[in-house]
Image 1 (spheres, rainbow, N blue to C red):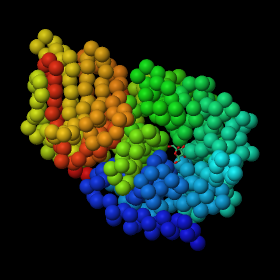
Image 2: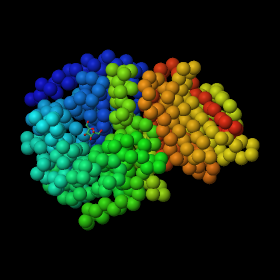
Image 3: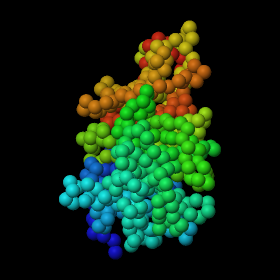
Length: 492
Ligand code: FRU
C-alpha cells in the first residue's frame, strides 16, 4: 500500500505540470516537475537508465515538506519524469524526506538512503534528523521496516541530532558499504562522519572523516567523495561561508577539498581547497561514475538567498546545472559540459578579428546557445582594457560577462536580466590568462547561463529571468580586442 500523502502528491504533480508552459522551462536542464526543487538526490544508474531524484515540494514554488521527485535519462540531457518517489508519510520522516543517495545492491535492487526529519514538539519545532532507507520492489520505493537506520545513538559525542543529514553511500570493492553524512559538532561548525555496514541495512559509526576546524562556514551539507585522476576529492556544501579572497562569495556554496585517501586507515588528508562555482547559482552537487567511466557532477542551479526572485516570476522554482565532466589538472578540479552536448550543436557561425566599441556579429543570437570565445594576447595593435560579451539582450535586458586583463577578473552581471529586486546580481572571479589568452565557453538554456573558463579550470553559473524575446548577443570592447568566436544553436 502506498500512503495517501504520496498518492496526493502524485495526483497533484500530474495536474500542476500542465500549468507550466513549455517555453517557461529550460530545454536541457532538468527543472522541477511542479512546484519547488532543490538538491539533486540519489544520482545513480539503475536498470539501463540514469536516475536523478530531487528535493521536491510539489504544492508550491517555495520550499516545504520535502518529497523526492524523480526523473530518468539515458544521456543526462533528455529527462523523463517519473511519479514522485518518496513522501513524508512516516512518524520518523513526517516533516520531510531530506537529501540522500542511491546505489544498486548485489541482488539488483535499487536502494535509497535519505534523511528523515521529524519536528520535536514542543521544543520550538527543533528537528530530529535520522538516516532512513527505501528499497525498490519493482513498483515502488518501499520504506524499510526498521527505519531509521542511523539515529542519535550512532553519533559521536557532541554531534548534533538536529544537524545530521545528507547521507552518501558507497559500495566498496570488498563488498562492504560506507556512507558519509554531514554533521554539526559541539562547536557549531561542520564535519563529515563516516559510517560502515556489511549489508547496507545495518550501519555503525566508524570515524570523523573531515572537520571544519573553524574554516569554511558552519554546517557541512551534502557531502560526496570520489577518486579522480589519482587523487581523492571531497565535496561538501557549507552553510554561511565567509569570503576568502575571490573564493566562497556565495555564503552557501560548494567547497572542494582535494587530497589523498589512505584505504587502510580510511583517512582523508586534505591538500588544497577551492570553490566549485564562481557564479551566483550552484549548490549541493552530487556525482556519478558514468557507464563509460566519467565522473559527472550535477548541482542545484539556484541560490538559497535569491530563489525569491524566481518564485516571484514563475509558478515553479528550481533547475539543475548541466551535467559536468570532472578531472584534475595541476591540483585543481576542472569541469566541462558533458560531451553529449557537443552532438547537439547546429548552425555554426564564426568570427575572427578585432572588436572595438559595441559590435553585433552576423548570426550571433539565440537563447539556446553554445558560444566559444578566445580572447587574444593584447599587443600594440589590439590592447583592450575591458572586453565584454552581452547576451539575452534587447533594448531592455542583457546579461554581461566582462574581463579586465589588468585586474585579471571576470565578472558576471545579471542586473538587467529581469530581476526587480535589489539583491546582488554580480560576481567576480580571479581569472588568470593562459599565455596571455582567455578562453570562455558560454552555454545558454532559456533561463540560465553557465560559463566554463580556460577549458574548465573555473565555472560560473547563474539563473536569469529575462524575457525570451531578448536574444541578441553582442561584443563590447574598451580599446581593441582580437577575438575568435564560434557560436552554435543547441538543439537538444
Ligand atoms: C541543502 C539542504 C540539505 C537538506 C535539504 C533540505 O540544500 O539544506 O542539507 O537535506 O537541503 O531540503
